[in-house]
Image 1 (tube, rainbow, N blue to C red):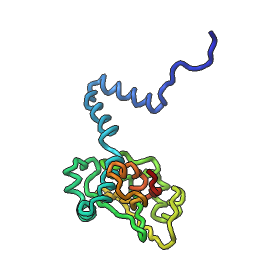
Image 2: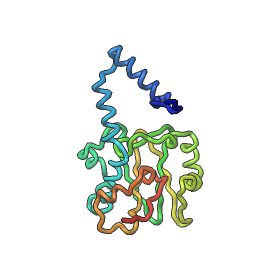
Image 3: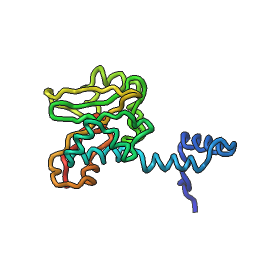
Image 4: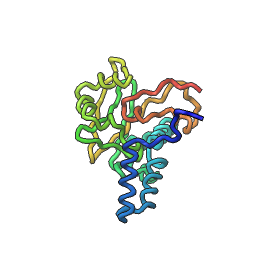
Length: 202
């Protein structure tokens, strides 16, 4: 029976190149496959914005935890094993009606991996790094974020010595929600400051 559809789909060119490089390194004994599996497992399931969202949600419901995280988050992050791999020297910045925080790294792409995962491509781009400090409101508008004129925008420049996480405002209509449900509302972009959380519906 004639047919014109493909039976299989090949991986993308970058995926094929990565697989070829991995195979070569393993065959030459330069890389332990078990170590590679552990790294992949870590970045697929243990590191990412779900960690930051969990922190934000707990800050929303626990005033003592919120105060502690705004004052000195490192002891708690170390206790929660959210430390290392660019997770050192964290500062949490709380958005309010009066102030909206936005994070950039003008020199490279310093970013809190344990809390947000691998930085998105736009965060590393020359355009974002240059424009975020010069015209933050225009950049935010391109992300769909329009703020009232009375709201100040503060841009924070990450470095290897200081990394930032934005704590977005808790959406209206979430009184009584569990931390898990609240965490599901928090996005990666909102914790960089390039996104807002929409009013919750449940």
